[in-house]
Image (tube, rainbow, N blue to C red; front, side, top):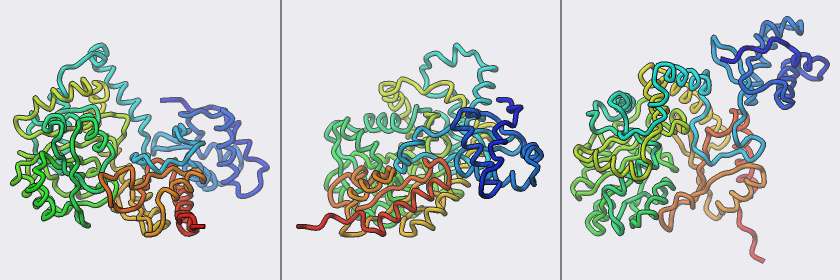
Length: 458
């Protein structure tokens, strides 16, 4: 852990500034960061020390540190102190509302936890083994940790069916290449994850679009498609669907599984968001384990930098899926797989997830207040913003960019023609709640002022 700076030089910059004293302290801190006097990871002096140095009340310093945290300048953990925060990669450029990242966990530091865990792993293990090639997709212990992580939605899962994959995209490509051949049909929703659209193009598959309602795939329409097109598989994101945020009910999941089982079609269940819910519904793989490949990444609930996802295969398909995974990605990074397993086993993953859930709910509440027409669960890290009829999502996207905002519209998710018009607004990428609120207010202003209206015909 980085030691605290012993001097209070930057604090003196707060003297003589106009306005409230707490704001002057936060401004001084920000200036010290910009000037390089304070570096990412530096521990700030204790609040009592700052109060004594300036001869002010402790509550004023507490308010100043809170303001600095809101600006994204610092992060703090109870019992450890307050540290200068490393700026996000997009800071100083566009405010990125396109990338579905888990927000920084409330009350915790991912960077320090990662440093402590990797240090402990390297101290206990042979680094040369960790940094070598590994033939298997997860040790028995890593598969057990994965099964434990998935248990809230899958229940008890035999370890031989669990593979540790280097991210959900590689797992998705491996599954599709295992069960499909070029020219085969894959059922998808009208708006779906762009990664599956990319995989379909690479593998030479044919998309069949199934109608949806407010509960997901329409079983009657799916049955007609299965009878006519005879698809090999269906790809679904049943919880907090990307991008529309729809969550299938348990009853709808059973209906969909029954239709696909009767048709002999595989189910490819992509489930990145269930951990965000406090009481997620059972996975489709828990209802139809013999027909479902279940993919669950840690990228949306803990951190995309782990590059770890768990792939649960139907009994007897593990070896073929592992062979396909090896062709696409060779192996998961051993160090990251070890980090993920340790976090799950020692409770760090649960604590980190709790912080992400709290921050996600706080940000979703901001979105509800600023964009009440946006759709999404209270725990969702993205919302779906319908674009009113007669307005252009493309023009809204361009107008937003002129204001320094990056948003992604329905075209990026479209699997065919005639899809709904709208934009997916991701809530986790903004540096702070304040930055997110300002960005969302700018989007609301663009809609209110008609920025998405097509130009008049002249």
